[in-house]
Image (cartoon, rainbow, N blue to C red; front, side, top):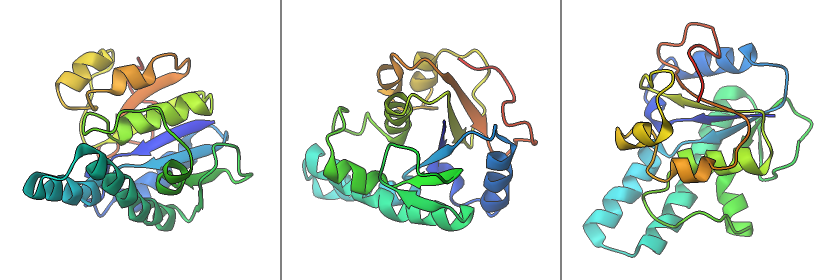
Length: 189
């Protein structure tokens, strides 16, 4: 299985649908589980948290809930079904319903802004024993960059290295805006 996290920074790009469909089609024929980033949905929760000062726990659950429309959006773009299961659905491509899953089962990640969907995708990749974790971004992460440096530069979240610990598969960040048809361009870490 391949876990593909689609960064919310891509949601305002008109080319996202065609590029994402081409990217997924270029991957190995293994099943693909897509994890949605929060994008503007999570940014709205960040703003509400900052302005109204509710707790990190409350912000966490609002941010988790904001991932449902993001998942629906990606489901529509890909023409793929939603799943709240970590087991194969029988479909080649499914979009993971993070909201329903997290509301039903405990996920051992901190409830803070240090954890974003980057770390959640790493946790999913470990849980399903994926062969690959591909993070689709709007930024170039130079091949070979250590993940702790990528976190320090804001390319992945601050918890990502810890969430990725123990994952045996290949992990790579891909700038989808500049991706040219080679799904595994650049090096992995």
